[in-house]
Length: 463
Image (cartoon, rainbow, N blue to C red; front, side):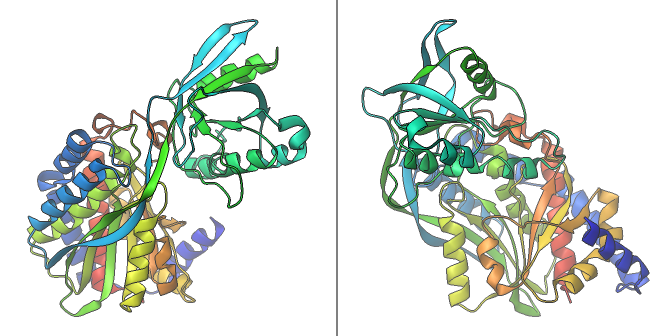
């Protein structure tokens, strides 16, 4: 934050890089962008079809394949210079039957069903399930300290909540999600036979959140499931009074990797076509909901950027490319394949903008880069703030996004759309991440904000 304030101060005292006439022209054109997005935007009807007609789009599933075909067809209708599918091999994990998690034979409560989802990539139990005593922990390190003597044959219950005092909910998520991603491997090393994880949300409710996890090489895989925060609180309180045994049964399956695709469309630049400005989101989603906020919203906003430019008959100097990445949720295969092919083709991404934080009201953008002159580039971009601030948009330091992360070696600017994040983790990876949870105007404002920033990047570059 201190560096950001310094940048703004520097920007305020430097000679503006935009002349007054150019500034006025830019302001009028950005107003046209917003008018277009809010009256003729296509992001909302596209999202309705993607979420309600196709639904959850886990990589390797028939729904993911349908989403690839649908979004390619929609990009084809925009009469872009190029639309194509980019192959990538993705993991194929199937959840299977509804998970069963139950407190059994409690002295105080008897049998109690707990609401749960298997974590993505988790193995299943045997056909008869497993029953074991539960040991509650707060961290991965606590598992190591307890060791095999305390954990052999037990179910480890990770119950560290997201920190509610963090104003930035993504920081709170980052401070808790290690137990979901690595908890099963750490517990297995100490002899545990299963893992339960508190769902990643600041809200107390009955809704379990799934999410990705992985097993370390050489570690015996054990079942890993997330339970709702209310059930986590119940289990924790009961453990204060008595030893608790839990029954778990689930049967997810991992199949051989499957061929899928990134969906790509672009408007080729008229003056500097070799400089690419990317907008994108990830087309896959978890299977338990409709993937509306995560990340159908980002996909349709990115598509709408191109649609808005085409309606305005805008002829970009640089190539503007929309990429809908496959397999962000449980593997990042699409992002890695895209960067590998891009590097092989010696492409240069001047900037890449990812929308993967939900379709809520946009508050601005976060930016990062490995470029040695990033501070200069960031300061130059900060001169655009007077054009963006009337629309409630700021610019700050921060991550760009998982799918565009593999492009860091090209040393362009990686940018993330930053919407209001306070409600995002209420829906993240849940069955309630559905189309009706997305507000049409908020979604369209995000598409407009992305288009405005792409316009400025295209016109002025970053130097």
